[in-house]
Length: 120
View (cartoon, rainbow, N blue to C red):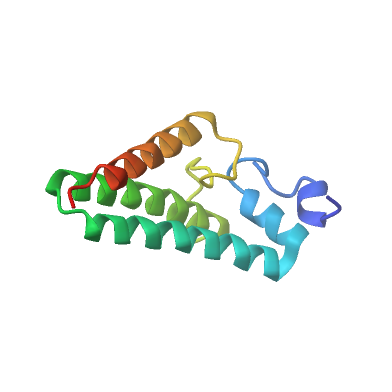
């Protein structure tokens, strides 16, 4: 944890809103790309589970939770890059956000439940 941006307090909320910049500074290109690939795998699994689900409610539920996850992620990335104003959305599954983490993990539980109980 010897990065200049996070250690010298240039980032306003380095543990929640700007955690990606701290991780990118510490782990470099490989670490940042690995995190982005993990997010892409979560989205691919969610979209494929929604497509394979024959139950309309289950498919819409999975699609809605996946869209929520994507918008959390996309808005945080836009804030980090300066394309959107800082609105306080933490990076899913990484940041120190209590209520956002609870909502995301509850949504993933719903995705898994709809995926397991899909009609075959």
